[in-house]
Length: 254
Image (cartoon, rainbow, N blue to C red):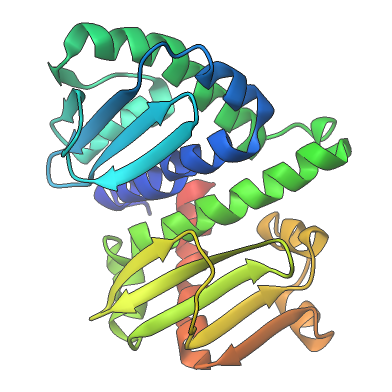
């Protein structure tokens, strides 16, 4: 069963969190951003849930914690209301910069989230294009990595695994392509979309095709580990706990 508060964190840190990577990787997203005449910073503030600000300009998207620097703000009275925006396009309550906010939400923001959905939930036909296939896999990694921390800090079951995870950085990545860091401090998880300098544990996939197969549930993790296609090293208990949280990610993002 999905906890609505945990789902809000998975949506904020996983799904919407991938917007900054979409704007970096995707040509269509870059074209959408070129239409912006001025930068826009929009805060989504969820009561008893996450609060983040998304800063958009023609060069891309950056995300910060809290509402500082936001020129537009939308409040949600509950995690359920925020999840309805993600799943049903139902907006929250504009409390700052309402006109600018509505104009941006109904224009560039919707175009970007529609494109994000196209990439994260592609047709089989679109995946035949190699460049698109690779973009899909990279965005899935970023989405999953963000959701790991979101759920580790909010989902009652994932929190059990988080409570048993020692401090340190875990490096997750696809060999020679992309890496992210899951940082653990006092059982709180933070996803950093950069390679860890001194990881305490490492989980690395041999190539992008393997990563795609794993994300789609088409290949066996155990089999690929036995073949040496998944590299595990360091404090293996950290990787074990992250793998348990990944099971929750699969449930929430399905």
